Image (cartoon, rainbow, N blue to C red; front, side, top):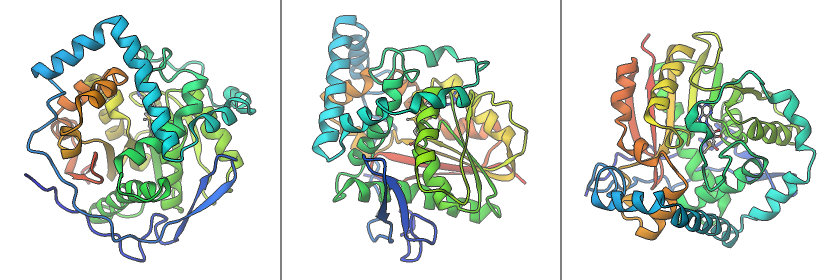
Length: 364
Ligand SMILES: C[S@@+](CC[C@H](N)C(=O)[O-])C[C@H]1O[C@@H](n2cnc3c(N)ncnc32)[C@H](O)[C@@H]1O
């Protein structure tokens, strides 16, 4: 059984806040809670399975059986409902107050943010308009936007089952991702002045990036104006930053932003939501937007994860029923595609038991 290369332990001085040992996180009351971010001894090697990808992905008999089940509408409807119930109840069992968090957003003034974040000329690619994550309107709804942060925390908790709390799970999962990015950029380039977080959703990854790289100008970009409205709403109510975040409503495949204007472009949990043609489009656009020596960081589901390869049939069937592009993502040779686009220094590491962070550079 292969063991992936361990990523370096976070040293005591190296915390999630990149030198400062606290990071703000909103509580359900929308106050700012300080989560201790002191370094950990828990960054370990995470295990790879023996396969290239799980048996439930691709052209295996098991995968075909799951696909046939999902494509049958009455079964899909039951699965979709089941997947949603599992998500909510698992979150609440883990002290993530899913319904309360969502109610608080839905009953707030968030709707007023829409006008300032939405770009009415944004064109949605066809894949984006299909049902997604058990929401009929996919990411284009207030309910999806209101539930996104709870869903994010829940995913984090599932990824790090050995953590004692959601805060600790966040510190490990996001800390390993940020540390991997920092190490890559330090090795191949210099300062990080401008960061673009493509597929920023409601701004969780963007907030972590802004906090970890406090001297950088950080922009979050997403295709869902609903998610961006929540991101902007929460950011306005959070602790003011020295480096306030800007939000852009656009397609990450065709942003209209100036070439060579970023040092770091991050895609955090975006690619498994995209068909391969969109993944290639996103990689090409990132290559255009990065300066020479700039870093691209892709963190997402790891097909080689032992945990995911051993997932129970019930769980992976539920997961696939709400993730229409998971198969295509799992079959994509990401590193190969990155090389074709022109990226160099491509490295992939499991940064938690379920996820990998792939980093690469635009050649100097
Ligand atoms: C799971 S969420 C990302 C979560 C967030 N980055 C984090 O780490 O907390 C995936 C996001 O990708 C966005 N997305 C998908 N395709 C996109 C595209 N072509 N351009 C911009 N955003 C896209 C979706 O709207 C969604 O908000």
